[in-house]
Image 1 (spheres, helix red, strand yellow):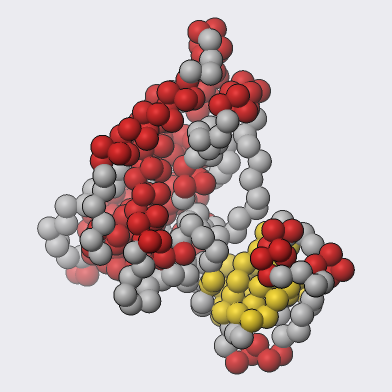
Image 2 (tube, rainbow, N blue to C red):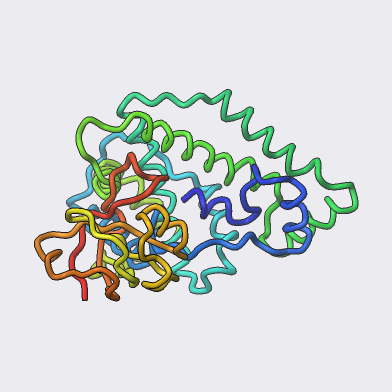
Length: 308
């Protein structure tokens, strides 16, 4: 989610001159391919939202007095920011909605465990990052990038910082708190999200109807990741992309991950005995099946439905 929300201007904590040049040139900072959440593929997104939209309608819909509200301003701005990446309007609405409920579910979960947001500290962080971004431009450059921003996305950098990046900071703070205060009971992102959708079903369904977010095919909750088996530790398997056997032989798992284009750990069942190092594999898994305390760290995906 954080990577997604920061996509428009990149990481504002980056050296301001690099950031300035990237914005002036109209280029985005390149990112590694990432098939995982917190920005899952549309397959997972649509499946979860189908569950929310359909199961909790009608007689199943309970008014629980929830105080939760979907941030409509943030949703609308994210629609604009992603319009060049996702052309299909229905898919776009679904993707953005899923990103919001995923991030909001983790924030709420952290609060349920005792997390208290330091609003003043986050406000100061936002102001500092916004100042760092703008102070790198003279007046002519600032007018130019603001005009380009409006033409390309339909909103200003001020709106970006005060709405999109503000939410990014709020989410990141909650995730970092969870990293340092892991729950006593093992809990996955999937479990957190499912509980959140159930608790706030009425609010989410009403918002989906208002924004015409369509129900989708619920048949595919799983996604695939194809790569090379690079390490096997007990029942955990490291699968990597972008490297060959002769490039990683003799390396530690950490070194392999640094060398790889992309990588992921998967927890297998008894079929692990049939695996061998350095074979090509295509893993089918639930991309939300990782512990919430690992949200911004190395993920181990626990729900593997199959492989070939």
